[in-house]
Amino acid sequence: GAPRDLAGRRVVVSAGGTREPIDPVRFIGNRSSGIQGYALAKVAAARGAEVVLVAANTALPDPAGVRVERVGSALEMREAVLKAAASADAVVMAAAVADFRPVTSATSKIKKKDADDVPRIELVQNPDILAELVGRRAPGQVIAGFAAETDDVLAHGRAKLARKGCDLLVVNQVGEDLTFGAPDNAGVVLSASGREREIPRGTKEALASVVWDEITSLLT
Ligand code: C5P
Image (spheres, rainbow, N blue to C red):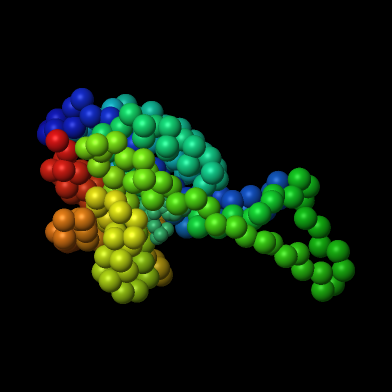
C-alpha cells in the first residue's frame, strides 16, 4: 500500500484549464485535460492527506476521498485556491490558468453583421495565482507549480522558478501529441534549492508520486 506520509496534512491541488468568457456561448480556453492534477489529488489522498481539488472545466470522475470544487474562469480559480490555501500545508498548481481574459464578456452572443465585420476582443492579464500564493505563503507552507513548455524546457523552467518564487516547479514538454489528454507524462522537478530531479516517462500517477515525495521532503 501507499505510505501514509501525508496523514494530517491539508493540501490543495488545482487541475484543468480555465475558460475566459467572450460572450455567453464562447470562451478562450486551452488543451489541459486535468488528468495530471487529478492524479496528484488521488495520490495525496491515498497517502493520507486531506485534499481540496480545484477543478476547472474537467470531465473526470471525482477522486474518492477528495473535496472537489469546480470553477470556470481564472478569477474563479483564484478565489477558490486562495481560500483553500489559507489553511493548507502544501499547494500544487497543476491547472493551466489563462494568462489573459477578455476585458468584458458580452451579455448577448456576438453577431456576425456584414461580410467583413470582425469583432475586436481586447484582453487584460489575469492575476498570477501561483505568484500570489507565494506572496502570502504561511511559514512552512510548500508551493509547487507546473510549467508546460514547447522548447528550451529546462532553461525556461529555471527562469520561471526564480521569477515565481515557488519551492518546486515541475517542467514538462508539451505540444503535438505530448502530455495533453495523454495518460503519461515526463518531466523534471526543479527545486528552489537548485536540486533537479528527472522523472522518466510514466503514468501521471507515477509523476504525481515523485512530486509528493519532493514536497514531503520539504514539509517540516
Ligand atoms: O507562467 P506560466 O503560466 O507558464 O506558469 C505556469 C504555472 O503558473 C502553473 O503552475 C500555473 O498553474 C500557474 N499560473 C497561475 N496563474 C496564472 C498563470 C499560471 O497560477 N495566471
